[in-house]
Amino acid sequence: MTAAPDTYESVSALVRRETAMVYDAGKEYLVEARLRPLATAAGCSTVDEYVRRLPLDAEERRKAMDALTINETSWFRDHAPYQVFTDVLLPRLLEAKAAQRHLRIWSAAASSGQEAYSVAMLLDQHLPAGWTHEIVATDVSTAMLDRVRAARYSAVEVNRGLPATALVRYFERAGNEWEVVPHLREKVTVRHLNLAAPYVGLGHFDLILLRNVLIYFDQDTKHDILRRMRAMVEPHGYLMLGSSETTLDLPSDLAAAWRREQEGRVQVHRPTTGA
Amino acid sequence: MKALIIDDSRAMRSILRRIVTALDFETEEAGHGQEALDKLRDGELPDVCLVDWNMPVMDGYTFITEVRSNPDWRGMTLMMVTTESEQRQIVRALAAGAHEYVIKPFTPDAIAEKLEMLGLVGGAA
Amino acid sequence: MTATAIPAPTHDDVRGVVDEVWETLLGDAAPLMTRLVPARAPFDSAGVWSASVSVSGGWQGIVTVELTEYVAGALAATMLALPEGLEVVDADIADAVGELVNMVGGNVKSLMPGPSVLSLPSVAAGRAAFSSDASEVARVDVTWAEQPVRVCVHVVPAGAAR
Image 1: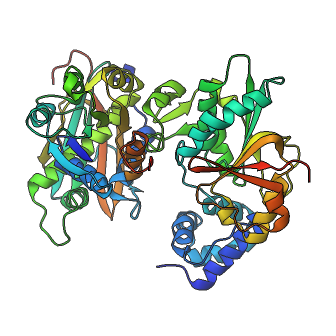
Image 2 (image 1 turned 30 degrees about the horizontal axis):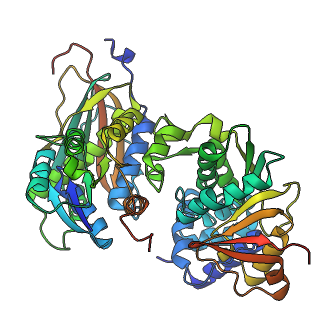
Image 3 (image 1 turned 120 degrees about the vertical axis):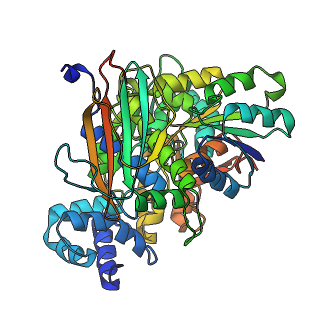
């Protein structure tokens, strides 16, 4: 029942062209699982048949891209980075931005929004009175951006890593789902963005969360993204990658542009000054 | 680490047992709150209790209240795992002394992540 | 009848609950498919298990699950992780189906005005029977592995004895 190898290759090429993400060999099952429901809905009897249709059908192609780029995420994913944000980064940012009293944070692969709203919850608790903040959530998938805007999550989703105290404080029941409260929702701005394309009109950020997404890009694109991220972060700001993502193998210009700092179990990156 | 799984459904206890055993917990089981209290009085204390709400003889809410009234059991972590999913019920359980709350239905990850948040799995090292 | 005045969950709400419970208990390998059944048609299969929970307090209702012996057996075998080929005994099925209706019922309760209390499940081999006071307000008919599954919500007008 699994899709033919050439189907997998053409999907992989398509995803790469549309989003610059790389679908490694060995993820065939994922392609099958994510495209089968779409294939059935489109009246195709096999995933192979559906994939053959994609080059000719822009609407189905967009749906397929959405399905293939979905990230499974939980609240406060990996926990430690959020701890470091609250305990270490935030006090330093408060010092650096004492004059402006405004923080800007970019959730650069927002997926269904758990990261952006997790940060919103922390800032609600830890930002001193008189400060304001904006969280910009971007994603390549329009379906995901709709989810971030709706800010509604199923019971199964709110079980994932969200402390019960936060659930009762920052969510309201909305029918069968849980909806993020308005005062958190209004802090999050949603924008469509392909990380491999230019970053226009986003402004600068005190913290960029670029977690668990670089792994989907090939080496050149990954380096290009890190190069262009340098201009997006404030001189005193931080870039956070996923816990399994490393910058050890960077080309020399990039290695010189970012300084790696170890905070407990978490690595953060800061732009180097001058140079 | 040791977990006491309190649920009137053997099938649900079996699901929870498989999840926490995979996280290196030893397990004990009880079919209702009273049986769980008896186990706490007789044996070695577990690190965490996974507590259903609706059970015969003694429900999970009463169990939590009973546990919290005994200072000897203060070190034990209590996590509700229940289909009760009104905001009001979660607030009540937390006020009564539950540390965490998982709504049924849940995925195995949800249990693992909450136990990690409570410092009972991995992490810290 | 004034049953229309009693709040009731929508079909989609109940379906959402059923899908979610089903997926976490049995995985998404075989999804629930919608099944078209004429209104008021009884659950039309031989070898049936049924289970119900009642909700009382701010809202009075009964949530019932009906499924075939095959589906009930598969549910019990999965939940209890029974080795393949081992016969599933009635006690196992009753336990698993009871927990299923507890999960569906608790989530339906949370959609309705409260506070209310959920009863312990009652499980029977055989079709569900409903008192004449109860009126059906939502019904979800689906198939799983080509076998029928039904979830019903009935409301009981205040003051009516069950």
